[in-house]
Structure formats: C-alpha cells, structure tokens
Length: 305
Image 1 (tube, one colour):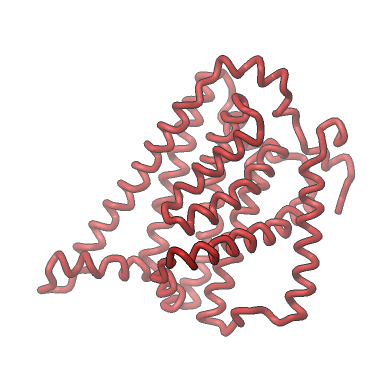
Image 2 (cartoon, helix red, strand yellow; image 1 turned 180 degrees about the vertical axis):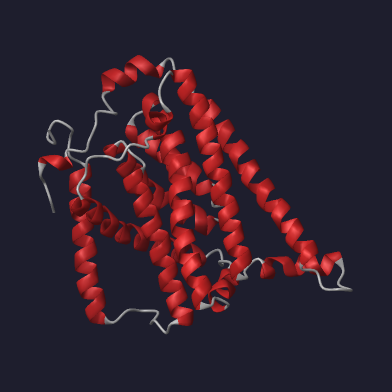
C-alpha cells in the first residue's frame, strides 16, 4: 500500500495534555440524552409512517387487528422498506446536523470541524485499502451473529425482502442501504458523538462507548453484536483520520456489499458459499488489506509526518 507523505493522515486528537485541559470542562451526559431524543425521533417518524401504511393498505372489510398483524410482512415489501430507510436516514441526519450546529455554536467552532466533515488528505489507494480491510471485520461480526443464533434464533422475516425483490428495486435498495445509513449514522455516531467523547476520554473509551451506543440503536441482540463490532472499526478509522468520510465510505461499502450478496443469493443465483478459488484469492486480498489498514491506523502522528 501507499506509504507516501500524503497519507500522513493522523492528527493529534488523542494527545494526553490536550485531554487533561478539556476533560474537566466538557460534559458528555448530554450526548446520551440526545441519543435518546434521536431514537425517539426516528421511532416516531417511522411509527407515523407505519400507521399511515396500515390504513392505506388495509383491504376492505379487514379488521384493524388483522391489518396490524399483517403489517410487518407488508413492511418487507421493497418500496415500503426503502421508504423506512429514507425516513431513518433523514431523521438521523437532521438530528446530527441540528445537534452539531448547537454544539459548534457553543464551542465557537464550525459545524464542519465539530462533525468531522473535512475530507482527510489520504490517497485513493489508501481508501481502497480501508474498504477492502472492512470485509474481514464484517465477516468476523457475522460469525459472532451466527454463534448468537445458536442461543437466540434470529428474525428471518427480512428474508422475504430479498425474495420479493425485483431487479429495479434491488438497484435502488442496494444504493440507498449503503449511502443513507453510511452517511447519516457516521455523521451522528462518529461525528457528533465520538468526536466529543474523544475530547473527554482516552480513545479506547470513546470508541468503545460510541460503538456500544451505535450497536444499541440496532435493537436486536444480533444487530447489536454486528453493529458494535463494526462500530469499533469505523470508530478507529474516524479517530485516526480525524474525519467521518473514510468511515462513511467503509460503512456504505459494508452495507451495500452485504446486501448485494443477499439479493444475489435469492435473485441472481449466487452461491451461498463462494467457490474455493474465489475464497482463497479474495480472502488473501482482504486479509492483506486489513493487516495494512491496522498497521496504518496504529502509526503515531509523529511517524506519519
């Protein structure tokens, strides 16, 4: 991978002297309160949409109780599922921008700086390395979910989404499931939440707490485990690059890549287990990219100048 000076991406956001200076001045409990506010906002918006869908799709003569019982299945229809993705992305982005603006105004900084919206000085090759290095993290988190499913059965209703997917909706779904959560969730969690935590606590505490909160937003034990593990990876990238953008790209890559695989299994005849040659070559590439990414992220800022 490229080790040129333009990859000197690591900023001294974890300098202990700076943390000592700000640790007594910053309060972090409002972050957790605002997370609850954001969760309530997302839930309310999606709840209103669900009620509207309930009444507009109810068959003549069908009772409200029967329609409500059928609602989860209806929400697995691609157009309605995409609508929920859009509502979630809109509400999380709105919350992050609003809270970030208030916080930036209070701290006399710009929203761009507060939320980590500057693109870091990294090369395209470095970004590709981070993207490919995300694959082993995804597979490890999926492995943990499989172990959890041995104790707690997973919800297989989402499989109906992939089975009902047309090619047209598959394209829309794969793009939106990558772009919207990839940006909105990184903006809120790694931008608004984690950047403030980093000013108050050591990086491992800030990243760990952010990842756990990020995981809890995914509600089910399987979703919590998956999101928490991936959140640590995304948090490390955001911390060391001092920007949400590389992590947002990785987040979108993970979401879209996983759903390409799932849609491909049910609609395009992709095998559940890839051929041996693909696994060997692909595994070598992504493990190499992961090892390089970890090595790069562990560099100190003084070594990167």
